[in-house]
Length: 263
Image 1 (cartoon, one colour):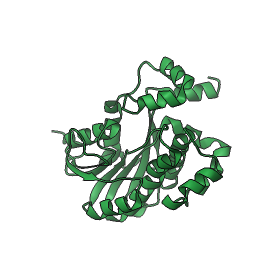
Image 2 (tube, rainbow, N blue to C red; image 1 turned 45 degrees about the vertical axis):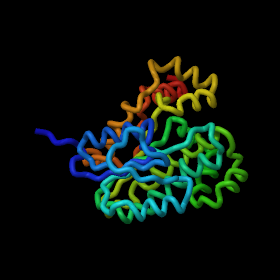
Image 3 (cartoon, rainbow, N blue to C red; image 1 turned 30 degrees about the horizontal axis):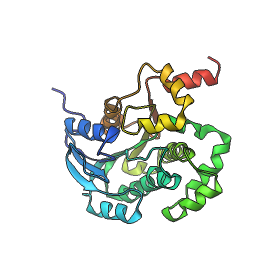
Image 4 (cartoon, one colour; image 1 turned 180 degrees about the horizontal axis):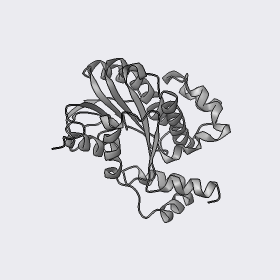
C-alpha cells in the first residue's frame, strides 16, 4: 500500500488564508503533512496550526521564525501581493520578505528539507538583458532600501510585480546548490493566470494582454491545479530537482516560447 507523499513531514505554507496558499495547505494536510499555515489573517477554513505574520515587516518575520518549530521539512513561499498594490509593498512581500524569511529559517530546517517558491509566468522577462542590472542590485536589497531601489530602477505600478517574480526565479536558480551539503533544495513554480481572489487585479492591470491570454487558454488555472505540484516539490520524490522553475500554466509558457521563436 502506498503512503501519502508527505506522511510524517512538517511543512510551513505562507499565504495560507486564500487562493493557492489555502489549496496547498489543504492538499499537503491530505497528503499526511503537519501543516503550519502562515498569513496576515486567519484562514476562514483553518488547516493545521495557524501562525500570524506580516511578511512586509522584518520584526514580524523575526517573531514568526522564533515561534516556528525547529526541524520543519518544507517551506512553501506562496504569500504574495498583486500588481495593483503599491510597488514598495509588492517588493516587500513578494521578494524581500520571502528571501528574508527563507534565509532566517534555513538553519532551523531539517536536513533534506525542500523550499518551494511561488513565482509566475509574469517573471519570464528575467532573460531580457535589460533586466539583469536591477536583478543583480536586488541581491543586496533589504526592507529599508526598497523605496530607493524602486526610484533607482524605475520600478512602479505593475512593473513591481513582474520584477519581483523575475528576481525570485533568478534567486531560486542561483541557490540551486547553496545548501546542498545539508540536502536542502529550492525550486520555483510559475503559474499562469489562476482563478484566485487576485485574478481581477491582474486582468485590470494587464488589460488587452490578459484578454488575449484568456482567449488562448481553454480556462484559467485553479488553485487545485497548482497545489499538487507544490506538494510534489515538497516531497522526497522531487529530491533530484534543484533550482528548477516549473511552469504550471495549461501550456501558456510553451505558447509564448513558440511565438517568440517562430514555431
